[in-house]
Image 1 (tube, rainbow, N blue to C red):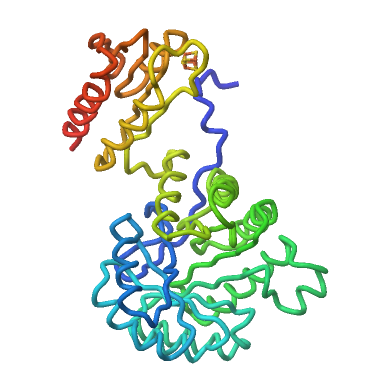
Image 2 (image 1 turned 120 degrees about the vertical axis):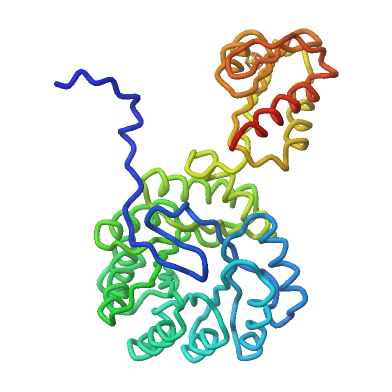
Length: 366
Ligand code: SF4
């Protein structure tokens, strides 16, 4: 037996190796960061509203934006969206393969099709040809609501095995056409089915996987359901791009996606604030301090850990572990930086003192 000391994290599965694909200027899969994407909730034909929403999504960090393309009028808007947005544009198509071809001709960097409702292999072949001609990517989106009849008959219902089989079959078809710029998604409304389907599929294919729990609903339940489903997948090393589906503003979906990646330490683009739940030992207004800190540091992009603890039980220990920490006391708090006790600060000055230290550390980062 080896005497090597492990920290235990080696028990977690590593990120699953996937081929890298390119969507506009954005890479997905391989060693690319796990990408955050979302979908506009506006009527795509309303170009003003759609552009305004895309701008807000991109400002929030959305790296790829998808829009619904239900008809030719929506296709006609795509070139202008493309001109005005920063990241790649994805067209979401159902039922009509001609719209997918038209969207690619109009400049979409990727089309999402559901082979289960696009009308057969010949139509998928036409879409693949157009994607290749225009240097675009394709997402095969398998959905539990639109599985092929033969799979439904054989499996009895849209089971995890049926979803994985459908996805593997469509990926094989596209790859046999010599087209590799393909991403796949399996969307189920059930967390357990989703995890099982992805585990089955991940053993069979190397294409990047777009993950999401579809129709998760309103926050906060939808947020929790998404976090449970996406968290389980990501901790199994599965997922190259994520979309959180909420019945809410897509900007909120983007914020939740980044918070989830941060909580899993997979992609940390802003500080993490740890705070104790408070209890009967508390002697400062901790919730007020934490809210104020969160508000003040919104603009900081450094992956720092900030701990705000209410008392001397765990406070000094946890605060020492963080990049910047406060351990509360009676009307004051101890301020720590990277394990070093700096000074005792009166409660009224805690937020200022903590912000100052956080900004100093953020500025020191390359
Ligand atoms: S750190 Fe102190 S105040 Fe906060 S929950 Fe723990 S014991 Fe209670």
